[in-house]
Amino acid sequence: MKNIPVLLGAAMIALASCTQKENTTVKTTTSSENTAQVKTIDSLMVNDSVRVSDKVTMQFRAKMLYFPEIKDKALQDSIYLTFADQLNGFSFAASAPQKTSPFGEYNRETLQSFLKQTQQEYFDQTKKELQGMQSPSFAQTWYNSNKMEVKYHENGYLAIEYSADAYTGGAHGNYFFTEKTFDLENNKRMLLTDITAMPEEKISELLMKNLDKGTESKNYTRKDMLLVDKIPVTTNFYFDRNNLYFHYSPYEIAAYAAGDILIPISWPELKGTLNADFAKRMQIGHN
Image (tube, rainbow, N blue to C red):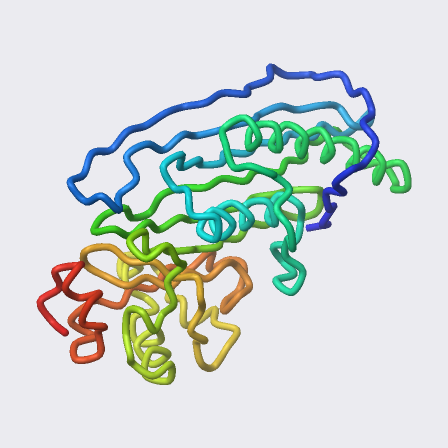
């Protein structure tokens, strides 16, 4: 996949829209007795496409979650800047994240405005890039799709999955995931050491042991497509009532054909290593 970055501050070029625009806010509400739970989650979205050359139509979709009850600035930065980095093409270069917030104040209006601005700048930059490239021989649609999704939200914890899916010509598109889990009671992003004291070497062994869990009915094994001898312990993790999950994007540990790989480790497998406070909040019987 050819990576075309978004350049913030690029001059706006008028492009005619060729499909219906969608800029909507969808509100969902969850109830909980735990004061650390967020009760309102807004979905801010943009969805539009433009013809950027005689053969290429570009579609841009983005869905950002907004948590109006989260007011801690450091926590807000950790939640929203990850999505801003992803939209601006820095997700493949973890060493170059946003150093300052492009939002100013975190509210529904500034976040929605950022999505619209980023969408327009992406269209502008794509059109500019195509001017120096050979046009495809047949009509095709390129796309850039980014979204946030809640994976877990109980016991004062909030797990968010950030995903991106893009195609800009070639044999296939590409996609990747970033997982972040937040402790809402202590206003921080969780580290693996907040969950378990198990050494990474032991966790790596469990990851290899559980690699093919959930694929038993398929006519292949993921181990056949591994690109590594030992599975590294990734910071892309989240959990639910039953398991701790480690998520790997295509090419990270296996061939593209293996797809993204989600490896579960059950709480009983971590028996004796769980953080006592974490186990108590999660009501896990083994600690």
